[in-house]
Length: 369
Image: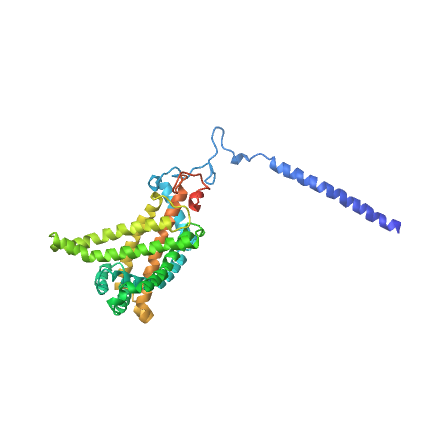
């Protein structure tokens, strides 16, 4: 028995010796690999510096010192546009716009009810349909028909029901319409790579402020359609009233839209507010693109698209919903442009004293492309 066990002892000893040699051999191989000189092909010629890599942190992005988007060179703008195009798919802009469209449609009819109730405090709501004709060419014909039908149904209840006694109903309608604004804020958070950090109260106050502001502007604009011609007639420009209104309508709409988008881009996302210079370019681009796209889509629906033939009685609703979806995409594309412009510069793009990257309270301002 003792002789039978001796080979096993020798075998174990041999294995142990081999095991102690393996780590030493491995460490020698690692040291040899680490100590190998850089291949000659990878070395720059004598007297010539090695070309910097695009990922080298020491390499400055074009426009890294820009105080505003206007100071970014063309190469930097090209980088911005490429990243914005990539962000269009990475941030699921079309899907986010579909969510905004859904909540926007749910909020539309309560918003119309609130608008009529508030407008009825100052003027006859029955005149709204005539004043909406000015939106022809921008809003597809089917969409205008839906809005007019809803206005007609609501105004048929009588003017008395639209006074102060309907305050509770107006408040409920405004609260329902506010859901559409919150959905837009959610989509902007996705584009700016932010998580919602505001409390429920602060978020609700912010979104309600925008909702009420939109109602107030629409009411003032509709009243202006009635008041401005009277003023022009009084001062002696009665014969040129129609021409002046037609000429001033589109520039006025464009300027107001630019301002509204700038406010949404600045206060909508849950982050430290961007400076006005860093939200204005996306606002201008989105406003111009929205007008062009709306005119094109309205022309297409009027001359080529036949939604009623495909969807039957729902054709007008589908066409109107498609227009809202396209409009939401354009708004989010403007936000993508603003977000990438902020990343292109090293300078602080947020309000307040200048802060280093990583402490600005905004992902796009705190990170490099």
